[in-house]
Image: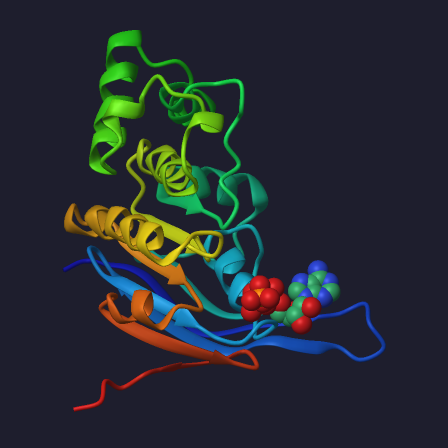
Length: 230
Ligand SMILES: Nc1ncnc2c1ncn2[C@@H]1O[C@H](COP(=O)(O)OP(=O)(O)OP(=O)(O)O)[C@@H](O)[C@H]1O
């Protein structure tokens, strides 16, 4: 299985305060194609900061970050932005859907922004494939106000998947959902890994974390792989 993400000794320090604060402290993490990884940690432990570094919204202060074998820890923003849109899909706790657009129009927006206008028929088939993958093709013409929270989150996942990302980064995607609905959302995220996508899931939910290939604990910026109890 090909290695998508390799972090080694990643450090992030918050400056501009009385005392600099280390938010990520020598983080190492490897994610292969088709693998799912849970990141678990208390509030303020640095989980979102880690996802920001992995998703190239933020750069580490030191350490090595290889994406698809290419060292990118110090990449200038313009090149980072390109890699961000070609390699990553993002899912957040809030769905960030546009209320006046239907599910399929919301998903299609990701194609317009990322790759210019695709021919209409091609656009439509990719949008429908993404909605189908997360089990809500029948809601293509519905607007967010008519959908449940879990359905809206699955539209957001389809929007992340439609550009065929190599890695999905999901930050508390079930945080606003009940247990049953959250399980459907995790199903949708895991279905992407069956097609070779890597998945990094930040979650507080032990059951959701247990469904991933591995769980890593982040404690005060230090990431440790949890060894499964035998
Ligand atoms: N831009 C910033 N300015 C000041 N402090 C920041 C900034 N970004 C992050 N922090 C601090 O860094 C620490 C880690 O934040 P981060 O959001 O990564 O934690 P988290 O584990 O995702 O927390 P939560 O589960 O509450 O979302 C926190 O103490 C936060 O207050």
